[in-house]
Length: 76
Image 1 (tube, rainbow, N blue to C red):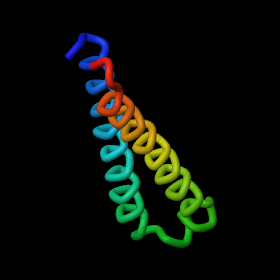
Image 2 (cartoon, rainbow, N blue to C red):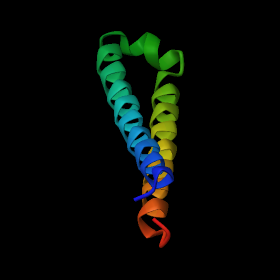
Image 3 (cartoon, rainbow, N blue to C red):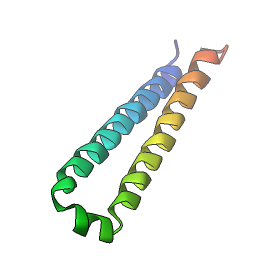
């Protein structure tokens, strides 16, 4: 396996780790804000949570795509 393939695997795995961390943080933030639900909802809190999950999803797809690209590349 070449150094470029190892680098691609590392970046893909790191993208998945960051994806999991961002999604976990969104869940924790949502649970913490449940105590002040009225203020949180009026400030558009659910939109922030949705955006966090959306960004995590895009990052996760990028990581999976990169891992698949490296795994399916015949030159590795």
